[in-house]
Image (cartoon, rainbow, N blue to C red; front, side, top):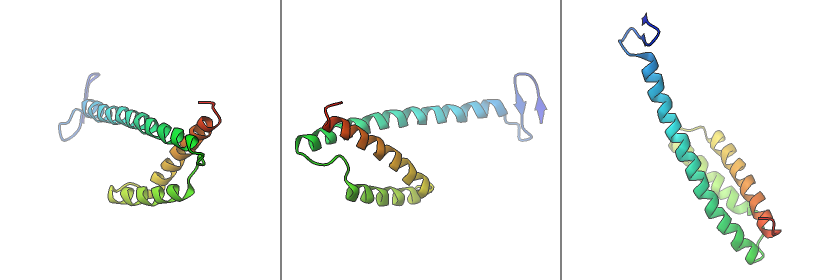
Length: 109
């Protein structure tokens, strides 16, 4: 492996820093997409919260949450993602959604 201040070249002749920069740029793009997807998801869940509040429905729907967890776990397995991680992530998001729905119901949102 050769090394200069600007580059580090692997035995295969790859500029290690350039490859790391390229990979990190991909991660940054995916992170940006995730933020935008979450924002869009929360726009939809806000509409659900407003609907629930208007019709006197409870902020939480445990049956729906169970269905979503099972669905997401299955998707995670198909995508070669740890289903426990996917469930933890969904639980985090659902907790925030319920908090928003409670705020809408209580006129705080």
